[in-house]
Length: 294
Image (cartoon, rainbow, N blue to C red; front, side, top):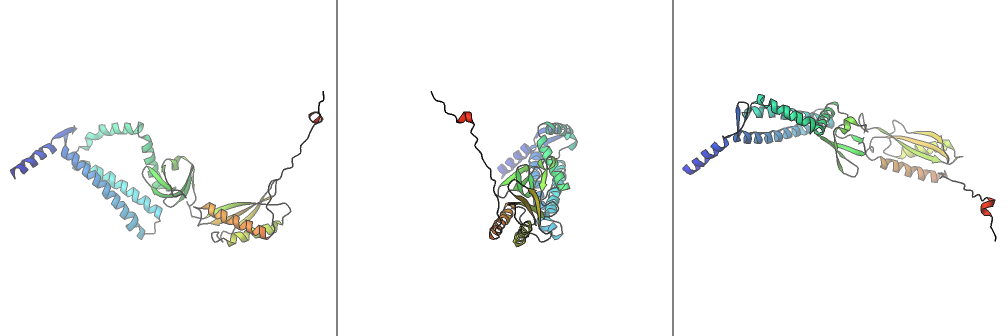
């Protein structure tokens, strides 16, 4: 029993040994150990509280999913900031002695970590201004997909190939972003069609509208429309314009279905889809065609 007591006293002496000094306050191994444990616990509790806010509390309101995600992330950052200050104070670390250290860290952030800080600030801007939100269909640069998570440094986008793409938040602030569902999920699709000269344009318009009306993914309101866009080299260029809310994340599927319907309908009604034709003339000059003899 005495040996155990001696071991515990030795361990306490080791933990209470100052290893560094901040201002007038010595920092012991026990304070450092306590600080590490409390910080890990703080991040764990903040994450759990965010999950509870997003998945249990806010769903009772009429707030949409993107707004719930943004609110949960902001609350988590606030909890971490306040909790970290409280932990430093409870660990016996004099915060006023960290002014010089904070200045050095700020200088380091300005030079070495500017991209990380830039992305973090852009993440805060995204959460507050909400140019994009979870569930949106976006295009930024070469990346296209659905937003599934907005973090402090980056945003996760899932493509149609089910590939998760991690995009730095600064991309959404400094570059042009196409948000297909920013206001609502109603998007207009344009399907070009070319028919041969001499075709009855009124018949073409009627058939195109019938194809659009037969597709379940095309909205009745706003109604589909047909436009004669150009007199091309090979034929008359039409454009079928339809609205949809169900396939904005798979635009190729809707376009393909409409094109299949157009081709089938045109074949049934004898409407010709032209292809480019070129007349090639070979001209032989007298000099080049002559035959020289010895």
